[in-house]
Length: 460
View: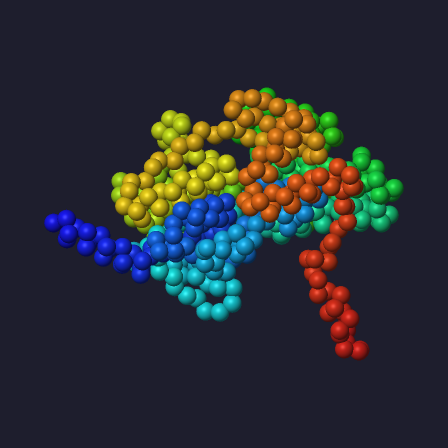
């Protein structure tokens, strides 16, 4: 009996060596990148093959977007190249357009060429989230989000370009409209983007003798009666007070009702023109999930167990895993019925737990529940200014700003990126902030197209 058992184990080992499990990671955001990286370290090539599919060649570390937009760090240093970090994984540049889990097959649209099918044994569903917009007239045409590095670079260039427009014009209405910057949404993304961009613009004004700080108008529109809902009310109130001291226009309990042709109309009856309308009012799960057969809750999130396994009612869907913004993961540190918040703090830890659980299942063991008590939140309000609430300890000003930087520097993946970010910050102590707009990045062929037109052809 012992001999037969030994032969069986040996035979099983040979089969596993020939046919390692294939793990497909859909999306390379916080969850996808961290999960793939951990899986590639915990599982040998004989145990598993990890395939990562994402249309972008990098992971964006979103907490650094405000600093990248403000010029505190290089935009390239806020992204992590996938192929350099995931050397033990296979990276496919494309978008997953459909998942048929009954067949365990995903349909992938590469950047160029026909679609292809990728079969898998386990799938990590982590496409993340997109901006949650509302059917507000003019928002589609006039608004810009703040979730990608492209949006951060565009916003930086746009704000600096508006300063140039205002300095060059003799029309007071054009100047007023150019220098009015409107941010919708008082969560962390909105507050940090608003504060960092105002800080940058105020620095830039030293080179614009035609303009005064009082010429700028920075408006925050928030539908609820507070900002930063992740921290206690007194910390939110402190944040509002600090922004008011910088002459910002804070509108609480106010909704954006229209922004057609740049005319901002608010629910409090006010109306003004603004060339800059930034939408940061929440996120929703990626619409890519609509092309899957996974169960969803009322907020369109994939329903999960605390083990990060996808679940349909009481039935565990074998081989399917999810985490992050697109997943409804029970929060075991709170009363039943509560779910983990869509934050980078949870996403990174869920990714690690999920990767460990996949490894356990592949090795024939039981997965472990994810449980993490939210440590708190940190936010930058511009250079040397911040607010933090960590494990009940509240900090403001320079200490909070320093904690914000220290925490996120420790969390961005790879030693390479940590060093580059620290170098950027160190140089900023000795060199002035770069405040030049590179607007041609957004339409680089314009000059060439004009120069290469045939002689006599009408200008376009």
